Length: 261
Ligand SMILES: Nc1ncnc2c1ncn2[C@@H]1O[C@H](COP(=O)(O)OP(=O)(O)O)[C@@H](O)[C@H]1O
Ligand SMILES: [Mg+2]
Image (cartoon, rainbow, N blue to C red; front, side):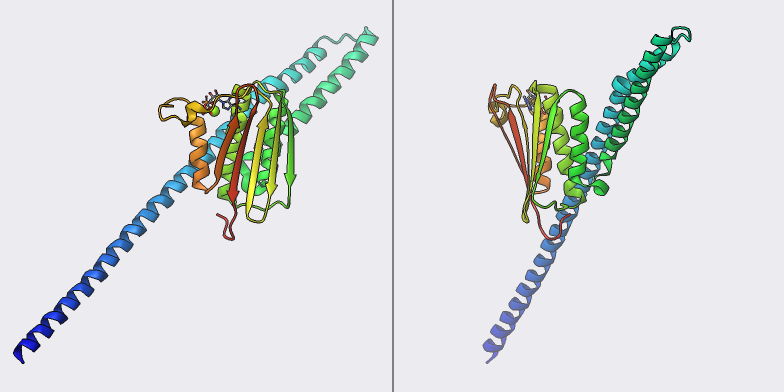
């Protein structure tokens, strides 16, 4: 009888002990999981801030370049015209007035375009498509032919996704301007209910992708790796296809869900 009592007491105590162990272990795991979630969320917010800053930096660079290269030049020419006008030389005067009018109109148009493109750091308000449109407009001014095709019904992907997508696209365009020696850029955005697919294709000299896939590409492709990492942050797929002499295509595919970030 006594042994039965002892055995059942010990069993009960063991059971209680294991239940206790189970609960505390579970609690510990939950806390660790929550901490990890918080860290990931914090890193995501940091990356978003960095992205926003980079977009603003790029916009400021574009603006200062545009003011210096275009608007400044055009207005200087108009001023030169005004300075060299001579009332007695009627015909020449007429010509210079017409010329100056054209120059001032161009400066006004350039300023309008510029103020539109300044909106690119407000993607949340204007949407991804408009932001890309303005960005391409600025690229066109540097001498490229550009084309933008939008297929399907535009779906807003949410401000965070759109911000990151836009920054990736800015980098793709920067690379084309810097490295591709291309004449034209064709961009296509395809909207489907479950995803957005963005393709940016140049007709430039292309490049060999093998160093990118090797482990030793220490300095090569920092920009590309950055784009890759950012795409991963929003569960997007980032793919480059290129071969020497054949131009380059970058395709970003981002899944959409009901609760877009
Ligand atoms: N559209 C392109 N056409 C030709 N070459 C390119 C293109 N995009 C990238 N590259 C090549 O890939 C390299 C890596 O690009 P990236 O990682 O952005 O670094 P970075 O632009 O700082 O050189 C570039 O140096 C260039 O040689
Ligand atoms: Mg680059």
